[in-house]
Image 1 (cartoon, rainbow, N blue to C red):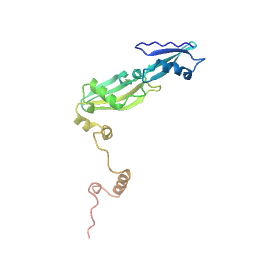
Image 2: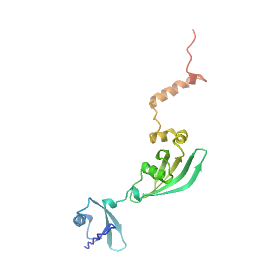
Image 3: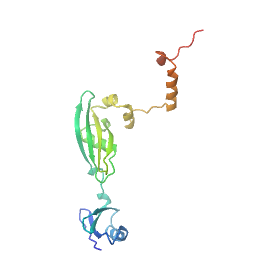
Image 4: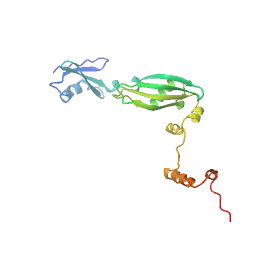
Length: 194
């Protein structure tokens, strides 16, 4: 077994013949090499030859939100609804996904807008990970966002209030109104005259 540790700025590499050794047998070598660090992450990279590369990354070198790339497509300025709208491609290698809060921060910085006026939604992660696609709306003002955004999306951002009545109460009210006709549905049933 050949163990080569390169103590450089880039991640350390350990060259191993995976036919004879497993990661369990390599663990003592890895622990010895990284004795001064908090932890490490192991990534196996198969090669064409009998040798396999086991790349070990320190915790501070593991992918984070700073390694994310954001690209916009189908950009459009919608004056009628006082907003900019676009399809957003988020490339996040090594990350499961990027939170909507992080997306909002990055888009707000990109378009020099307030974070409260950015509304990302409809994100789907590509099969295999590493890339997500969704839609983003950037409103000119918070007032226009409150005017045009659907209520459920405002509630998600903590701007609007969620409905307080229960589902059962709404259904019972609907069924009571079925028995009424015309303006009675709005005003309520008139009391009978004696």
